[in-house]
Image (tube, rainbow, N blue to C red; front, side):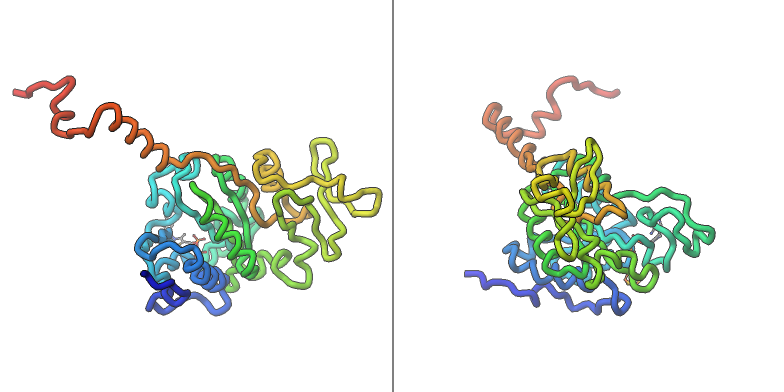
Length: 305
Ligand SMILES: Cc1ncc(C[n+]2csc(CCOP(=O)(O)OP(=O)(O)O)c2C)c(N)n1
Ligand code: SF4
């Protein structure tokens, strides 16, 4: 019988080279902690990264790994369109709102007006919102978590793993060297309760240190209401992970609205891999095992003189 794996089995012999205090450490530690709990053999696991500090990740995991090209990890993992096709793999996007490895230029998730070495007068680029991009690409599982929220991070990663099909997880990650405190509002213990909206399926959208504020619909627009002040829990929006419109609405929350964390959307549908295998099985049952040589010589063939 195979012996159960432990966290240590997933730690490679490579020296971890991130700046002291980088949020990447917390994400690596939690991934190494939950991997044995997922019960997947190391030889069946591959971590595929792009380019960047975060992309050193595969070196530190004692599994298969592939350090690929900038921004193209999903493309290398599967071909394009991974989310729409629902290929059974897990995408972890470390969002630090900056280019870390190349020493602090603005990135596609930096806010408008971001002053960096490459944008001394402030960036004029409108940023990507990873959650709504994933939803727009028809991802069937979309979630957000935070590097320092180790318990939440672990739980979200396990849910992403258990979801059959493509899972997309945005992890808010602090780059303490080039963009320190980019997510201070949702990670600082003293203030985070007033800015984090923890999504729980089937539960009303409540937040705040005293859990006394919530999200209510005012016609077609969401608004923050003070509970007890003419508003009660029954007036609030109830989170429903299968509601795509709600997921988009929450994905678009920007301050002064609270920042949602947790599973925005989870609507399982057949995976690309399963659908393709089913089609092949059906074809085999109908036509028997294929013969590539026969296939090549069938249909329209001609001789070139
Ligand atoms: C197509 C392409 N453009 C630019 C680069 C140069 N480059 C290497 S790493 C990097 C920034 C990486 O930042 P990010 O992906 O946010 O990861 P981080 O280092 O912040 O973890 C850039 C621009 C590249 N390698 N390939
Ligand atoms: S530059 Fe930023 S993202 Fe890169 S290792 Fe240092 S702290 Fe982490």
